[in-house]
Image (tube, rainbow, N blue to C red; front, side, top):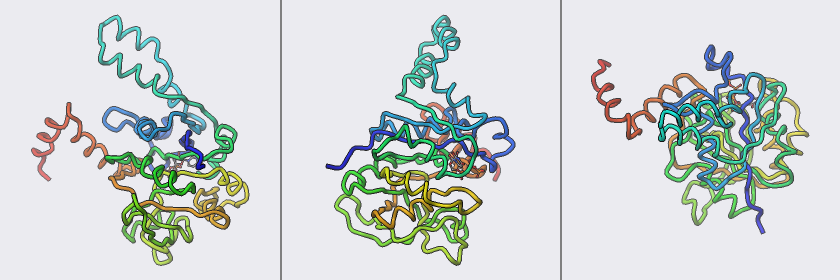
Length: 294
Ligand code: UTP
């Protein structure tokens, strides 16, 4: 029987240099998209995908993430005394959200290294990885789409997206062959190779890995076996390449829109799109945008 995925790891210990100076003292995962921090979108995606246990890998200066998901006693007292029931509910629903555990990455030594810090908390079972600066707006949550593939094959699955050639060198890129799949239409691939941040002319395809993964626990051994790669960091892509020697890995071209909210332009785009979609703000925001002389 294929073991169920019960846990999701959220690496949130990166330095967020692309978003300086905002990220000098504030974790990029706490940047608000309209009114919710990026990491909350990711946690909600995991919950809507059926995962209840969240493991957040934090680092120095990231305590506001823990505070955000904690009970805010003074705030609740204040809202309750002023009879602001709706706001009270918003605040309480965040702290009641799910089972959260935290572990620390003492130095930002790369995404692979961040995932490795969760080894003890994950244990010998499959798990998901969510990079919350990749915000994905989808009918069926992106992570759920990957879990459906995992539940069928019992192997690791990564989220894929087509990326223009001039941007490909910012991503982990796969060499993959399309395979037919009952539920997956033409979106499923079997991975043959992976390269982290290749030069555009050396990229094996235009299919980039986006921040959602379902991984089998052998990945921990692979991370422990590899040497630092691109940027001197322990790369998850390199560990996947190592894992590929002994296990199949699938890629799924997910349905939905992805925003790189860890990048200033991507964040602005996400803010506009999410603002327009909000039932309480969308109308007046659209009117405002229409009046702009562009
Ligand atoms: P990014 O590639 O976006 O790196 O990491 P970063 O360092 O946070 O940001 P920039 O590029 O300097 O602006 C992808 C994810 O992996 C986590 C980040 O927090 C982010 O969620 N990460 C990265 C870690 O947890 N630890 C690391 O050492 C590196």
